[in-house]
Figure: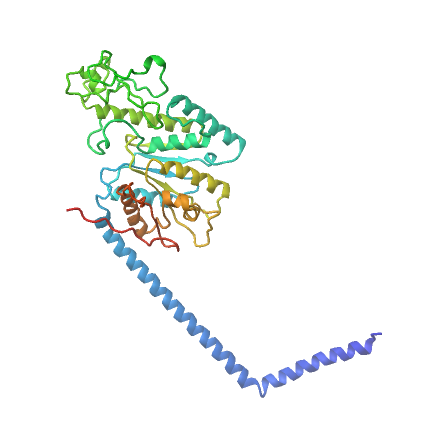
Amino acid sequence: MIDFRYHLVSIASVFLALAVGIVLGAGPLKGTIGDTLTSEVTRLRDDANELRADLSDAEGQLASRDEVIAELHPLVVEGLLAGDSVSLLVLPGASDASVEAAATSLADAGAEIPATVRLEPSWVSADPPDEADRTAAAGDLRQQFATEVPVGSSADEVIGLALGWALGRPPIPGPADLPPEGPIGPTAPSEPTVGPTGPDDQASPGDGQAGGDDGADSVDGAGDAGSLQTESGAGTDADSGTDADAAAGTDADAGTDGPTNPELGLLADLDERGALILEILDSHGLLSHDTTAPLGLGSGVVVVAPETAELDPVAVDGWTRLLTLLADADPVAVVGSVDDQATPQTQLILAIRDSADVSAAVSTLDNIDTPIGTTALPLILSAAANSDSDTEDPGTGHYGQLGGTAGLLPPLPAETP
């Protein structure tokens, strides 16, 4: 049984130990303990000063490197994308700084930005109202482009393909490469047939010849995905003596003297087609857009990724599927600023790099907000545009300051003689 005597002995023992410690600390051990603590503090202080100096040197070197890159930037990218038309696609959560850096980089390289499109979170949301909006938008697009939408496509595939048609260069009949520069100019095309045509509007096999009786030809292959039906007379030789209104794709009743180049009427049809697609998607709350130049001449699409590293994995999967659809038509580069702590499950750029299929079709850049990043972007697009489809190299690449990339910059393009 514990009594008062036991408590008294315990208290006395505590005070005795305290007294012994004070006596030893103030006597024989005083010098040793003091010297040890002093030396440790001195060493730690020296280490901190050395690390601080190293950090200052590293920051100075990075600042100097950025200054040099900024000075060399115009020499490297000037004219690299001259005549090219590159749209900006901004995903929800992308920072304004990254959007501005991408736009400035494209402008410095001579590219024109015909459209800046900002997608809404509803594009990849699993909420029933958002899914209903996407289904309704897909229904409108199917109605307008019945002969071009692949049979059996889901609603997400339809809106993704249509967005690619609006921002990129859809497969069209006529010259292999339409002129990327020169006066597009306002034209007076003859009521382009944007939607599906009826049996009375289908051309007979001989209608593609110049000098047809009705003066309005139908483009061959209208049933193929990505083809465009038009009454502009793109397949007619303007010099064959055919009625000028049919060859130039102008409406005689319009009372305007439009250009006689049939390609210009075709470009006007593509612009109208792209504007219609964006308006349909906008009307269903899937995006907002700012169009400043004719659509249908896209040389590529720059996608500004969300800055956050905490994206919903469902959203990441939805964006990667959209990017794959866009890459089927035009080069796609996804740019942004990636945190070192991000993971492929919650960060779009890392998710792209983590997938063998997506990374083979889409390029990425993880430091667009740096001078090196703004210099790398035109090089990435130029490499993709100049890639040879007959080889195993698709022209895609992954660049930036994180691990697992091909480096900070793509190889500089070889000078042409």
